[in-house]
Length: 425
Ligand code: EPZ
Image (cartoon, rainbow, N blue to C red):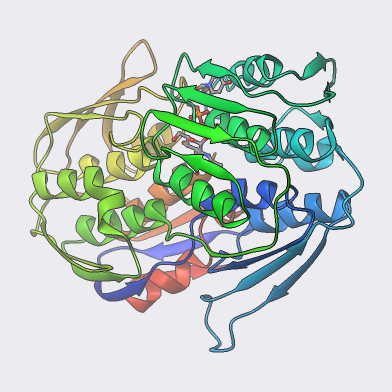
């Protein structure tokens, strides 16, 4: 387990290129099982969750090759998955307890084999993270699912049907799409999640011959295909990494241009940064941000399903608000326990009060945080603590770097490139 050491006080300035999206490539890896053929994936992030997904694909019998970019940087990596010889529908706990998105193999294995034996998913500890909507939806499509210490799923044939989600769950929406791609008939998902990563999954599945439309809206229609074929796809840019870096620069009063990002995907984030006093401009696939010497508070920051403010940037924004001028109220409406960053920030001098419900925080901006040794408890908490180190007085050590490495490929190199005094040990 590594750690990041950061010396605060540097104003970040420069240009950063954004790589492929973790939350887009993970469902796409699960989808490569469906075509029994070759899937060529460009712009893949080489993060921990990618390597876990590759282990799962190999375990079920796929061959996977990684072609690293030949210009010596971390971008432009291609991963080729050949699922023609996949023969195993078992995904054991050693894989699933490391990564929540392992649950997506349930839909694609059911679609390919009519069978899936999969352990319950692990992943970031953000409170209760049931998979009831996944199970209920797949059952409605014709899967018999026995839940013991594993989920044992069997079906003669997945059938198209109408599914109304109680909540626009990203994972449940993706699992239904994966199971429906090869089902008989039409599946309609009502109250579907609208995240950009779901649009990328639709593009990938349609690239292999699926017949899906409506991703990005609340109603997605999938007409089951007889067979799917090989596909080549470039993974969309990571909007959460982009939002993290914009916030990192904003908190230091700096300026940055992000390259290879789709501005429309992070409107909720750039709108909030503008409210906090940043000047934002967008041209094509570039976003430029110029921060004020000190950020302004926001009266309310509420996380909600896309196109609302993304929950994955709540922790980095709480860090930014903890040194803003004024008092902000933050409401975490997606997860029941996404405040692991708060006690660690309080140890650095942040003035944050968590309300009874554990979902609402009052953040009173302070002039200065103090460097400390703090512990990352999950992926985005780790990112938030690194951002705190960028502005804290003295040195900050962020331990449990493995959490951060799940979603950020060499974050220390990107931040060093724009002037941060950060190292990985
Ligand atoms: C995806 O998780 C992302 N992960 C998360 O990113 C992200 O925070 C989340 O969507 C919300 O945008 C990936 O894409 C790999 P949900 P997911 O199903 O699919 C409840 C990160 O940091 N729920 O939309 O698990 C659930 O408990 C990660 O990159 C049920 O109750 O999110 C949560 O409270 C963290 N029953 C809410 O819905 C279900 O069957 C949203 O969950 C499913 C979900």
